[in-house]
Image (cartoon, rainbow, N blue to C red):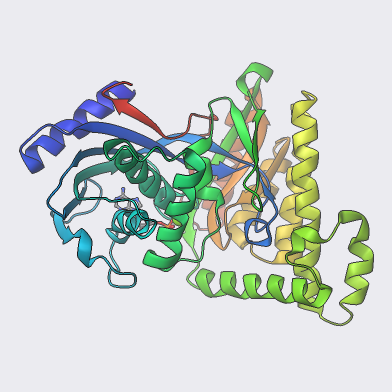
Length: 390
Ligand code: ADP
Ligand code: MG
């Protein structure tokens, strides 16, 4: 696929800017297999990259001008000056790539301008990290064109800073790291405290299994406020327990910790989710490393129940996917991403995929909901240069 895509994006670049791009890069979206709402608690996550990517054709400029264009937004070329970039000044999509330029410059890297045209197959707003794909593809292109020599982890950090400060979205480090560092056929076990990472074999097809992503295509409007509230609740829990982050509460000491929280009911629920979720990530890592892929199914379901009942970030549409899929014979299923809409994942035997997909679609129709988008997620490669090949 990549060659044809790179050519098409490069051709559009030439139409827009009147010359061939210096290169074409790609960065994927991601799904998180397990480890939800743990990243801002210094905990564990385990994403893998999707075959869906943001592809950017980019040329370097040395006159301080930044020109941005997206094939997916009905808007002409936006022209900015790199010296004028400032957080909080841009509420459109261009804040993501401009934020990356800003973050690189803030970190002391001299970015002297660029022409950018991009196109993405990562569904936007579905909890699959179209925003991180956008940031990482631009960061990687600028890294190459300006010979910055930054590795995937460093680029991920700068992209996170762009999204936190320039865009103003309080996201963790998972999405950008997944997009920058994942490998095909593997999930990425990431410790969000020290950013140490391990690639864990996750070759479903070889085992006769499939993983489906079900995008519910709903986004409940209160999600941003609820996210902030969960985050504040976790911080409160850590403070009450006298630890830097909930990551520091050992699973073995969870009961004692909950006791200490007394009648802080909401905080207790949040703490219980985070501590048990970190444990579930470790269990999934052990199972996958032992080659016992099917055994992760029940752990995924446990994770969903914890997000639904303790962390309370699920919604009826996500619960409907999980309940219907498991009733129809899935090995496991859970919501993935921040919640209140977005996507769920379903782990299934290859032979059951058709029946499960049909059951989910029928359940949505019966409930009067818009048809969900269902696709297979093959663990794919992380950000890379497409052309010219290096
Ligand atoms: P998610 O990352 O889960 O898809 P976000 O709200 O974090 O959702 O990011 C979505 C935003 O990213 C969009 O509103 C848009 O501003 C930007 N975006 C995503 N894909 C594209 C694209 N192909 N072109 C331009 N902007 C995009
Ligand atoms: Mg995002």
